[in-house]
Image (cartoon, rainbow, N blue to C red; front, side, top):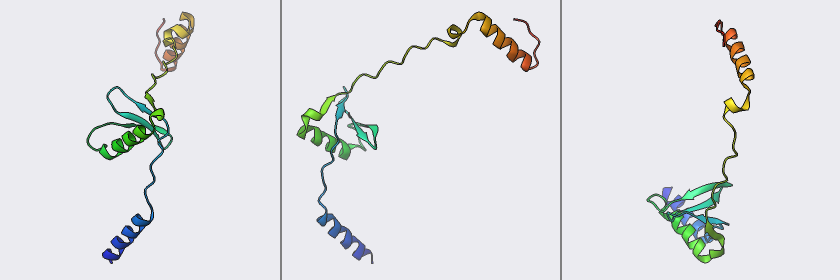
Length: 110
């Protein structure tokens, strides 16, 4: 029974030649690793044990399609958002703190 299954797998492998993967745009990092898009998400492909096959596939792809390789872009800087104490005036903070303390049962004047 198991032999039949193995034989069927061999037949399927022989019938379906493996198509090369189109990685689209590939980004390189300074350490020599790549960033690809996989399942619509960025995916890091390092050159370390455990990633040998995928790294080799991506490397072969970028060697065949050098126009698809570029350095990884710098991330967009986070927009500046002032710390909370700068968002509100002193009187607003005092009013909020007083209400909070009263709501917790503390009698404290600020």
